[in-house]
Length: 191
Image (cartoon, rainbow, N blue to C red; front, top):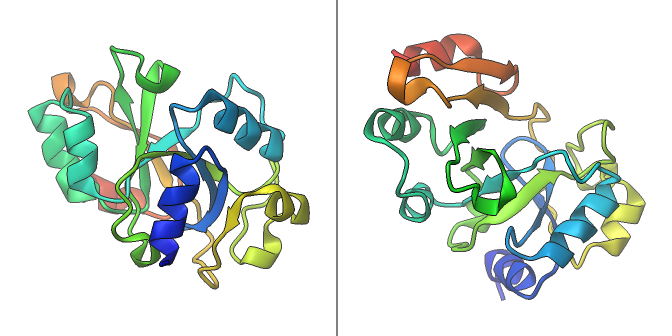
């Protein structure tokens, strides 16, 4: 079984996985499985009210799952994704229980072919240092996760978070967190 198949199986069966993203190591679970989400938050020691992003491993799958993404925003996402960004989108249906939807589509060759979306967060204790190698993921998290994938050393800068909730109507966006994709590159892509 490939790493991608093992990852997808873990998520589908309600597990929590440690995996390499294109930035730092992450934790993932099924975004529709309340028990798995509770476990992920407990492993991180993260307050339940703090939202996490939903990650797809294929841009087309993200667009298919989120048909409400409007044309102007979709065109920008086609330029940004896959990439080292998390975008905040309007979420009028409160999909996955979030007022604003955090969407991430990384470029992770190890997980090519994964078809399920995942709720994801960095594989560290809440507020702790990001893990750029598997050894930097806290031992308790590695031991309690259902699957641990080693992707070697990662770049180490988390994704840039971009708020696109007003982008469709006004063309305005805001960088919520500086990260792996520089602000100047985002400005180029958004113009």
